[in-house]
Length: 362
Image 1: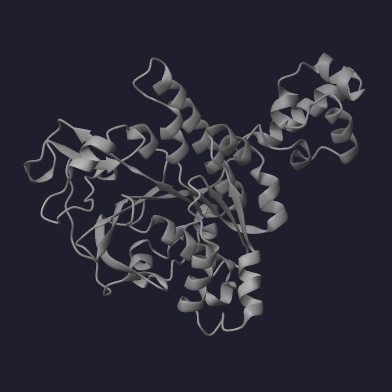
Image 2: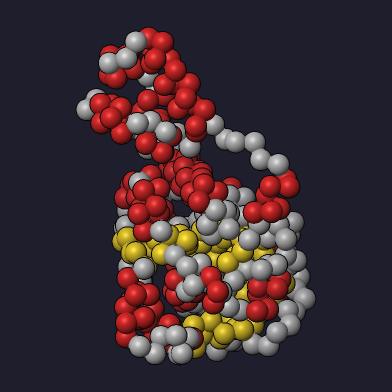
């Protein structure tokens, strides 16, 4: 991707410093210039300036990869939920985007905290043996809950305070509460991943700031929102692929009013941000309510797993799957990624007046 730093493209430290004096820091900055402009900024001959442009252009061009190489590199991040891992053929795939979407209170942030603990574990214990980059856009991150999950889920490993502190020190939190701040953070994240040794990237949530700042009923806002989400998705895909790490996103829900939903309702709840965004994620897990205590995880979109549903509860140790067998599930429409989602109600219908009036914006 053209926004990577010049140093990552093989440009010498001395040349990077020279170009930085002219506010040229990324490959995009350099490739926006002509050879003559590069001559002036870098103090090079025309031939050397042209060679520099060709070199940087080649460094950011997408490489050709054989299927055999991808097959050999294929690996997953186990979620410590055996039934889910079996369906996903090992866990969350590295090098791609996994989205967890669902209504408030279903455990999306709990899932992210649990995965953060897991990622810090050594590879021999099912972890990634690295750090975590956690971008929080809802101010929902809880260090206390992170520690509680660690101690409850892995009591033997985190019985001593030193290991708890070591784990917590490897989870690097960035709280970004506006769209511009999120984009700026993502554009600078390459260096953060390298410096922290991050093996997992989490964005919780992708929809929060977008829905607050873009009123899609106003002219032009829908297009601007789509452009911003496209930039965000392409940057996240690049980071996932470049570092071969799993990227986990959370998403909210929206209510469609006037359509024919399940059980004859005239509205239904589905994932926010629309159909275009649903095609940007590689794997979509939907979390929804089954009853007042139990929830369900639906594998709604995956290149390797069938459409399936698993019951779970939220305990001190995080997400706990009920039993080991996935249930058969059916979905409405042609895109299971836009499956209607059950929200918290009297548990005999799918919608409440609150959802119909308070979550209609996509």
